[in-house]
Amino acid sequence: MTGKILTSRDPVCGMDITVADSRYSTSHRGLVFHFCSAQCLARFTRHPALYTRAQRTADIRPITKKHKLQFVLPDAEALRRAGDRLPAMMGVTVAQPGDDHLLVEYDLRQASLEQIEAEAEASGLILKGGLHGWRRAWWRFTEENELDNLADAGNGACCNRPPPRLR
Ligand SMILES: [Zn+2]
Image 1 (cartoon, helix red, strand yellow):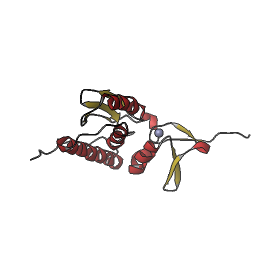
Image 2 (spheres, rainbow, N blue to C red):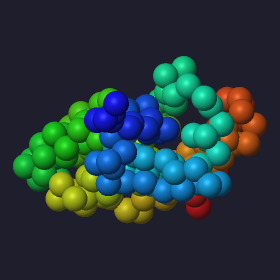
Image 3 (cartoon, protein in one colour):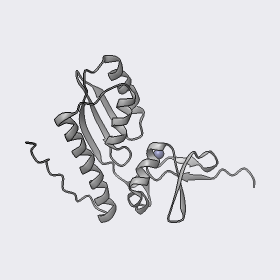
Image 4 (tube, helix red, strand yellow):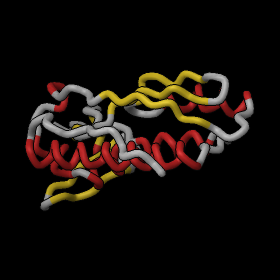
């Protein structure tokens, strides 16, 4: 009875992780959790209650978010690179380059806007500031709050009010 491979389920994306090969893990309330990537580990660390409350990851419905990310003087090469790299991220379902933007769609449980922005910038894109920068900060804020509320309440009730108008 040797050679049994011990696996552990990544509570964020539901992948089975071979514990012996695990590179990303953390303990929460005395239990050790293993993850497929730094991205899933970061999601878990931010909202552990959200991922430990539910028993069956497969039963959890995605929380789909969709945004247009705008860039300063986007160069075609960087846009294409981002269009390749972003869909490779856990939870990102759409990354569609436009003239001056990238349309992204993702499951908030698995990917945060912050992580997507970081990956876009790693591809060589410079995200637009000003009003767009402020909007992105607002999206990040409301989306992380939404997850906090979900973790607390255990239901999807969450207010998603439009941002107050800038002066
Ligand atoms: Zn994962």
